[in-house]
Length: 500
Ligand SMILES: Cc1cc2nc3c(=O)[nH]c(=O)nc-3n(C[C@H](O)[C@H](O)[C@H](O)COP(=O)(O)OP(=O)(O)OC[C@H]3O[C@@H](n4cnc5c(N)ncnc54)[C@H](O)[C@@H]3O)c2cc1C
Image (cartoon, rainbow, N blue to C red; front, top):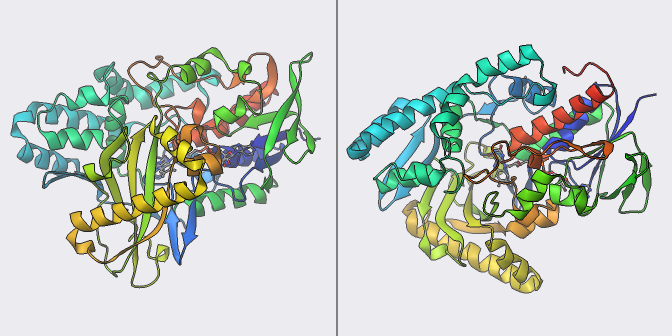
């Protein structure tokens, strides 16, 4: 009889584990607390508009890589699914000047040099490493501890350029990288991608991936992709149970073995393996006692400087216009929106004109995203204790965002209506996200050299962790590979072929 796997959480990681588990012949049941699967990779409807809430760019959308094969296997990409690609990654604005990260790296370099000739040497060096990062691929074939000598060699060949980049930017964060440049707009462009305490190489890797022509968005956006993955899993026989939270993993301490999971509804479900693919703060604290956490994970939660998390205030706005109101995703300075200490001045505005179905005919939809430091979460937690005050503040800030947008982009004047606003509490309420953050711990200068918590726990032989928190800093590729790797780890334990 097929062995039973229970997956906790129907985000991208849980859905990936479900597909690979079913393909490997396991009897798979996935429990998702929310009424829909997808986790943070989702979207919702408002007043005839669709608000897409995840994919700005997705690595592995170009055929040829292991990551693409993973996405294809789980139904995220593939035949008949168009990939939306864009000429620019984003545009940064400061004091009336603009600079864009084009897919055409030569154009970006030319424009940077014209803007800041004094930074020529640094610009050339940065662009050289970004071009090198074009060939870097996310390891998605096999977990590192299962690699044989052939895999190691293959990884060295595909990761050789990545190693050169890591070496060049070793010990540097985004702030250090910015400090190599004197022009304020170039400094802004670099820090607009990730916060100043993140690893400097993250900017280089991300832009390199974009230059390569990867980093597209599957047509239909985030919810459509999660729905396809759910259907794929169900077609393979996975039972996906939504609206049911898992409360506990029952451990037989003598055997060092999880015997069953206990649902919040009171049902007990026996199983041979459990894959917690939910937020790690749920795994340790709710499903399992906190003291089951390994040393590295414990250190990550304790050392808030070395492993920062962030949060965002976001809005969606209807635009009374048939034309695309903003050509590229644009980030501009808006000190008027700093509503509490720790909130950033930079606001990203993105148009979804590339998906005409997201708005009614003759209209468009824009979304804004404003980042904050970890402490801002407490601001929203306090407000949320009074639901009316929380609602009032969301509306006030959304209206203020609308006013600022209309002031900054004259073409939007009188054309915007607020559709929705959401906060870190939204991610905590719907996904149980730690401090309302929709990614995992960021990697900083003070992080461990290999900040990847092990998937197996000491003293329990059949619970294998998945989800983005074991692949910091998270994101879709990390979530998906963690899901696939969980199944490979189980196959190895079963003594079966694990090269999927
Ligand atoms: C605005 C935004 C923009 C983003 N942009 C990008 C991007 O451009 N590119 C990119 O790569 N990534 C992006 N991300 C990040 C990406 O969405 C996440 O990294 C990824 O979706 C996380 O997947 P996951 O499965 O690891 O975790 P989650 O999505 O958090 O899934 C965990 C699931 O577990 C469920 N759960 C929790 N507790 C329980 C329980 N007790 N019982 C049952 N179920 C439970 C939750 O409800 C949730 O559905 C973005 C996210 C957001 C919100």
